[in-house]
Image 1 (cartoon, rainbow, N blue to C red):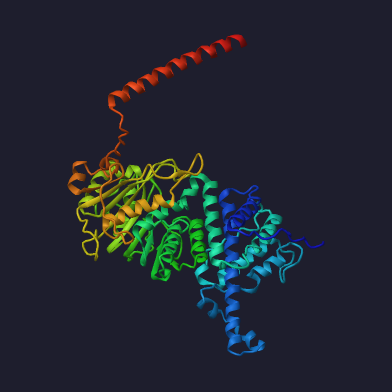
Image 2 (image 1 turned 180 degrees about the vertical axis):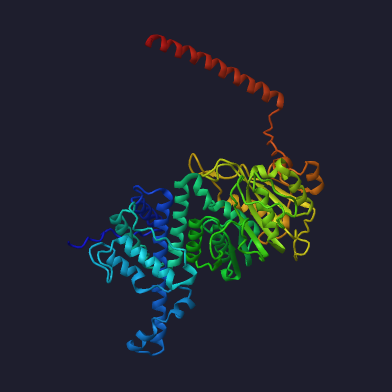
Length: 537
């Protein structure tokens, strides 16, 4: 059989073209696969491409160092396969037959891999995944080995390998493999979350929502924790925040936990692609049943727990229920109290929650909320716009908690006994008919308001002032008067109506006249429609 010709189309030259090309190619694989399996196939391949590229990059660095030391080719050949040298440089050790060049050459289905008689594309990839896990302890149990399933189109799989092989920018401004593949991975996560609908929300939080948490909390370093980490988006955005402010991402220690096996594996791959070293536990596990980080006290907690879980692992005598036992029919306040139990002495947290959590009184939730407020743990409440989550129509909010509201922080305002309320429901723009997103300005407005309230604004040194219709700083006494409801709309009031200078009597007369004119026009059009229908019938 003659070898299959490699596609001759030129490699994509921009990130958008690259994403579009890969998505269209990946889309061909769906066939009889459901969205979750399809997702694992694609993301697994993207990860394999990343580790191979990072390995090749590190190999060239080692070679250059050995050449600079004056070693000849024979000496280089003896030293270049020192596995510790690769790990020291932040790369995984990739065995010969797991490297992309090997797969690209042999995965066309026309050449037999050494020692693998009649191997299919999927069998070669499965073998590469197993070898990679065997060679790197941190990857054990992480990578998918589903590439030879009956529902996986082997021909399309080979074509996708060809396309992934071209995912490189050349010339000035080239990105490192980690940055390029990391962006592609995030893009795919978002696309898969949309494709899976409601289930997609289990592993993906919209980037704009994550950025609100990160920009408000400002996790420049320390211990960062997410008890329901999904695919690791909170950690990736934290790394980007630190890098964007000129810091060192290694200053942050990442801890996470995830219940779903496939999602836990995605998170492990996502962190590896972004160069984030994180402790996600030795395996997936229910945070309420078995806390994988029992002794952790975190500086920052960022979380988007599943909303309103009715069936959860509940123990009435759990030491985490310091402010009241959560109801059996809803885990919202179990998540909140678990997170409070994880906060260090000056720790802070941002938690995405269903809006009902701000005012519900069922099952003792109102009493727990009152205890949290009286303990002065609630720092800020933000009501977000609707339709940010394509996977659910439930309106959402963000709870910001703090163990120290500025009393012990140099240069900040002491906000003990106060809670900031922000009503951001009018922010955002429609991406399409089903989904809304927050712009950079929207995120900056929310975060800037919180920073000004705290007194930590550095750019403009703006002082905080209440803004009717948007933000209000309430005392605990005011919140108690409202029966401890934490809905921002109760406190911020209505935005002022702009005075256009027209006297109210004249405006009423003008608007009434316009309304009567519209009534007359509607009556005229109704007669025309009746006449036309009469002719037809």
